[in-house]
Amino acid sequence: MVIMEQAVSLVAPAPLPAAGGAAVAVALVADAMDYGRLRAVGLCGPADYGRYLREAERQLRGIDGQGVAVHLRVLEPVDYLDYCTVRGLRPGAPAAQVAYAADPQLAGEPFVYAGQRMAQLLPALVDDHLARVRLTVALAELAGRPGARAAVRVAERLYDDLLSGLGEGCHRLLLRWARAEQRQVAEHEARVAGGRRVAGERQAEAFRALLAAGLASGARGELLTASTGPARSRAAPRHTVRGWRLACGGLAPLAVEELRVLLARLPDRRAGLVRPGCGPVRIRAGFGLGRGSGVSSGAGE
Image (tube, rainbow, N blue to C red):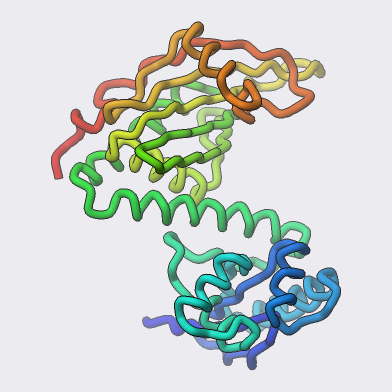
């Protein structure tokens, strides 16, 4: 069955589509400052951002109540204005907003509205949007590059080995790499409880893809982790920081002293891995990530 998608702008509402397999694309402004910038370039809508959100929620619930799937994306001012400039559209025109809502430029499956209230919806939508942006950047970097498929397979194995080795607890992952003038950063949080992994699949996919892009391109950088084990007392949890160096298409564990030197060179000394108010921090060496931890050892194309 072919699913038709029609765009609906909540800033300039279009008629609701009839139910029956249709999907509706909606671009939602997720920040009050962004809303002010967009109104300044001609977007119609309530002057008050809070009122905009209330009207948006009412319309979303109305569409959802008709059994129509709602595909959401963030309406970003800079991206939207670039989109309009390239296509010769007037930013304040409802047609431009409708076209932007339905444009499939971001990689990954669309974010589907599930009846959430705005307080829960906006953080989830923004988090998903950032992950899709990272995924789009990573796939563009991998496109046409020799060894791309092998790099994807290696990145998946490395990710699995990493979480298996870190074990039970909550793990914050930070990946940073650079090649020529290009720099990429990705953060990801995963939890392992009772042997099961709990992580946002989109965020995990984007993280693995950016790791694969770094491996395939021969970039240099590092992968850092901050882990807290299962809570055993009321005291602030202890964080364990580990690291691996990204180079030559693979990941190599960092020794304690190497990691200390690296952390000391970072702007915030902890790379944003450990949140303020946390408990004591331990620096530990990285561990081996199994065989085939480099692209050169992966299967061929």
